[in-house]
Length: 228
Length: 253
Ligand SMILES: Nc1ncnc2c1ncn2[C@@H]1O[C@H](COP(=O)(O)OP(=O)(O)O)[C@@H](O)[C@H]1O
Ligand SMILES: [Mg+2]
Image (cartoon, rainbow over all chains, first blue to last red; front, top):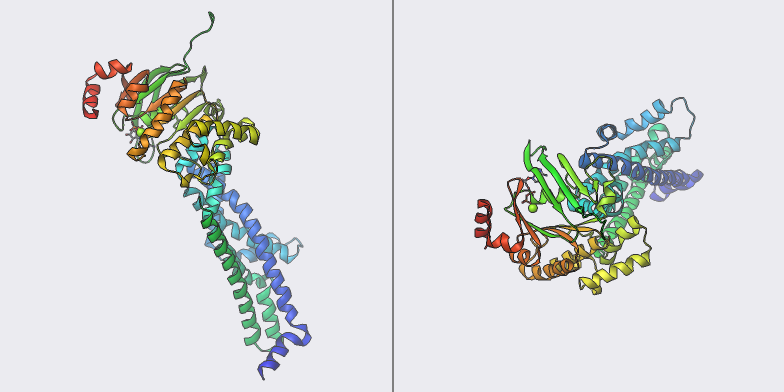
């Protein structure tokens, strides 16, 4: 079979490229929603963890947050996805994509939390004291002085987390979610030709990873040039 | 005039502080300190390193939690657990050895963020107040700069202006010139001298003996967890009583 025939068979015939296209759409959607969920929840976890480290308060919430982060980071993403789908939502009928949003978002939160916590802990103690001495409460000090500096410091790491997440979503097929990887695999099973569709999917992942990477690098450069 | 009571601005009673952290157990740093500061006082605290001077100063605005005792600030025992310490801290400015300016904010915002967020001033009101203070520390042309564009001496003058921008009733200084290159010490001391002349209540920890003698109305000698001697500048330097103080002065001068 010539290359031309191969491409025709795998992408054009029966509109098979649609598997890749709709798969890509889901992959990107899951990534973006999971990043947003991850950042929101990750912030909360990071706030709890670093407040405990700094002040000794929030003992119980810290225990829970610590346990959560340990379990999520210590178990495979695929298993977490399967557990959310087959255990937590076993008796509820909700769209698979929502399950994916939740599973990947919960996973991402644990990693984001550790990134932001590291950012907070890297800020000089004198910044907390300066805020406090002016009359700012601990939470206000965090909000106005610590977090803006901490986030700026960890933005590249957060960008990398997004790149990792994009690739991680490729296990969504385990719950029969039609993502980019599964789209390629469906084509393979129909055409009995593995090379072209799988390589194409890989190329698309790589393309987006490189785009994200460039965005992160650009952001980093902008931050450096505006570094005060 | 006749009925006005002259209660001190700050009254410290039986203040104890020990550190109980992983580094040290039962390290007694302040042991039964009793002292008062009046409105308009320019009190300097001197003494050997490790005496507890910083800890004492930081207990006054509760950056360190005292172990026991009372600190009456404007009549309120601020060591009381029910006290809203954040409100009282607005009235107690603090200047640190390491400046601790907010690096992500412009000089102007370093000054205005407190009055805006904590005292409800509008942007314009806060900036007007801030610009007056920047003029006072002779840095009005640096309002739009960022802290890392300033020299150490400039940073510390901005830090002083930032504290003043909250219009505090007392200013606490913890070795404000110790982190500075020698040629920058003068400009910071000059600002502090003017502040004292303007009758700001000041409590200053420093090793600048000549400056203390010139500006203070009282000098306290701290060593070994307590205030061992207190006097007016003249007698403090000319007629020291305590043996530790005599030895200290000999080494310093
Ligand atoms: N956070 C802390 N934990 C344990 N010990 C401390 C802490 N801060 C200060 N100390 C100890 O308390 C003593 C007094 O310190 P400090 O108040 O900084 O003295 P000074 O300012 O007079 O040099 C020192 O022995 C110091 O090691
Ligand atoms: Mg000290």
